[in-house]
Length: 298
Image 1: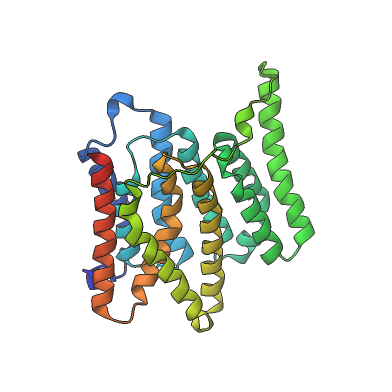
Image 2: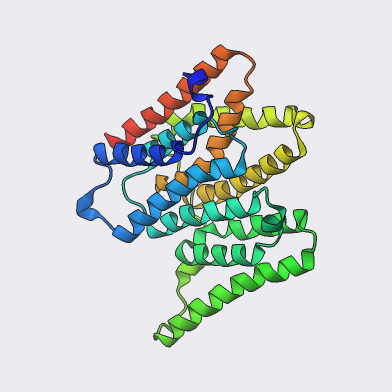
């Protein structure tokens, strides 16, 4: 199976995977049409669909089927059937942020901070718990941008522009009181009941292994691979901060981790030394995800 999935994809692969994912979710009756929120569900599936295209845009997956299959299974396993508008918007906007910051086009990568600031502000309005993304992009900016002062101005101008427009319109509509939901508070206490999360323990352990293996062989990587993988890890940490602080029992927050995790897992499997290790690792991950799905479904 691993050899089969290691074959290169073609132009028709991504639409086919998107269609099959939609059919799979519908077949298992996860998408409940009686409670269908058209805007949220369209936004959610647009976010899922953009995730498929991001793999090829970043280029860390070597254009194989492995990443697409892992992504499809992860989405199927974690997606509860309907999402809060905030998480749906975050999934949608995260794909744009990743594409702009990890693009091979240097002009796009270094001159898009105005747009990125605006996107993050919109994301925050829908889901205030995504505030770690502001810090992530700011640190990424000062670490990689050439004209730091100008790009910091662009970044904050994009944020202020969206916030100013939004709060100005709300004020004109008569909403003159500040909504305390825009001040996300950390949960009073961390959850001690990890059911059914412990079914995902093999996935977590393999992600940790894949990251450690990357740094153990860091000097062997190309400069482009080093940059993009480091960017992806930093993005993963920003999303993990949101999940750790605010998830609680809202396990749909795990969808924020799917995109970076899948790339990390796929690369980790690819660079395992023995073929049997690759095959065994792949099936352990698949069965772990399906076991988690079964635990939440039944």
